[in-house]
Length: 156
Image (cartoon, rainbow, N blue to C red):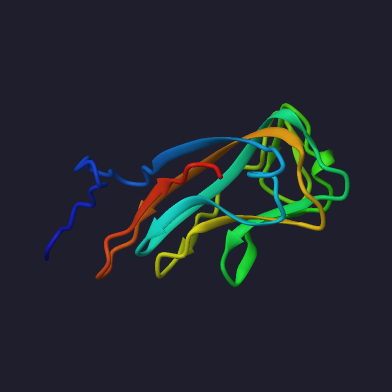
């Protein structure tokens, strides 16, 4: 029997259910990070298992704007669309269509992403003009031919 120990890109051993943590602070403005369209939150290489959520630190502003988090072809696959970003206020956790105050749901289900599909924030209907969200991604590589990796993408 062969045992394989997983390591991250910094050659640190990944033990048991431990995940590699990443975070990125996004200050929304139009033009730029608040513009309608797809924005890359995290860049993915290979096959990975992820949990993604956002913590709002400054009230969101953008009358009629909505957003969701996912991948190309399934843009709400990681976090369901919030129908009005102005419902996301400072101190709330965004990990479903209904933000929660202070405490989100338990992170029970990690979601597999294959083929290096980047994690996207899709803004639709209207531009977001203000607000700050700190995005979190807990991830680990999946065994396979392509070594999985996730990195923070500079907000743009």
